[in-house]
Image (cartoon, rainbow, N blue to C red):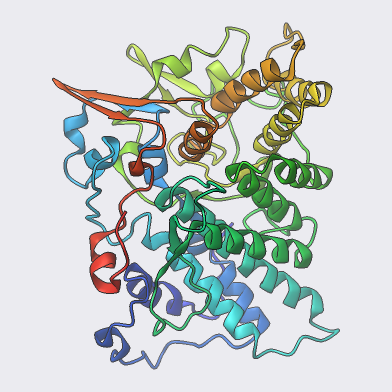
Amino acid sequence: MKNVTTWGINLTLATVAVLSVLVFAGCKKYLDKKADPQLVVPSTLKDIQALLDNTDEMNNIGSGLAHGSSDDFFAVNPHQLLNDGTLQAYTWQHVLYVSTRNDWSIPYNTVYVANLALDLLKDIPQNASNNADYKNAKGSALFFRSFCFSQLAGLYAKAYDEQTSNVDLGIPIRQTSDYNIPSVRATVKATYEQILRDAQEASSLLPDHPLHVTRPSKAAAYALLARTYLNMQNYDSAGIYADKCLQLKNDLMDFKTEIIASASAPFKMFNKETIFYARLGSTWLLNINTYVRVDTTLFSLYEMNDIRRQAFFASSGSYRTFKGNYTGSSGIRFTGIATDEIYLIRAECFARKENNILALNDLNKLLKHRYDASFQPIYTSSSNETLNIILTERRKELLYRTLRWMDIKRLNKDGRNIILKRVIGANSFTLNPNDGRYALTIPDEVVELTGMQQN
């Protein structure tokens, strides 16, 4: 889908990039900068929708650091990672952000555009003639803001803990395009309340299905709510919203007939499982196949009759690289939301509620679409056994989508005791469960300009 630039949206990226990199610190040197007289100020619903349809800005929002800090892969030669702060991320040290376009600034750029759209909508009367377009624009802006806040919280805040969420530090909750207002970190509780509030309001405004999957929809908002509640370990609500989503959108690709597993990029962009399309926005070296290989223990989980073994991976010497992106490219990472994730959320929630039959139904439905014709449905005698299988399948199905980092954080709160380790030469690095380093360091420049507390 081409970017929509019908009224010359030079406004968004040149100025927004400067502003949100600094998290709208209110610095006078930026306030004094004169406006370009050629910039066109958006003022109509069509203008606002064009702002939100700029896919380069609104859909390139996945977190490279979330992937780079996870255990989906290992670096072939870690010393190649010295140039852009990537080695620090790989070994869970204080991250050096060399580029101003990074995992902090990119989502806050998108938040700024969403807030700008919401502020502009306040000046446009909503009436019978524009009601559908107005609701779509407002709902889309709220969805994008919620989606980005959830990405930022997953990276820069501790895992949600009901007992400490009202004191744990979250992220700045920007709700206005006025960058004179200082940025301060909210609590984790307030952060997640805002994510949920935005997504819930978006779900009440958006159409069931979008004109295109680069746009948000009611199904996407329900999916985001399911994902968020899952990360909060609120499995009742996560299951409810996963079910709401799947009532609207439940397509699964049959890997036996609908893809060519041996192809270099087996999955089409905008395929039938895509609920909301987004792709990785940052360019950390750890996201490039040249530098990394799939974790060998992870690859060993795939059975010989599992089509994902061929569809997701390409041989590279003794190891494997990942090619299973839902982007139409072996090298561009999918960071949106797809139905496979939502089936796994609902299955997990059923299992945690000890509804073993329904959990197995969802699990087997997914796996029937992933294995060859020899697949035999899984049956277990306990919900706990089913839960363990579902978590393993979540590991196998959703790798390289930047979801693993949040999974590790929440599952360690659940007592899963996942310990991450890296070995570089004679040096070994370990990240223990619930370590404070699961909240990554904020860019030093942002901390210096705003005075907000560093992780």
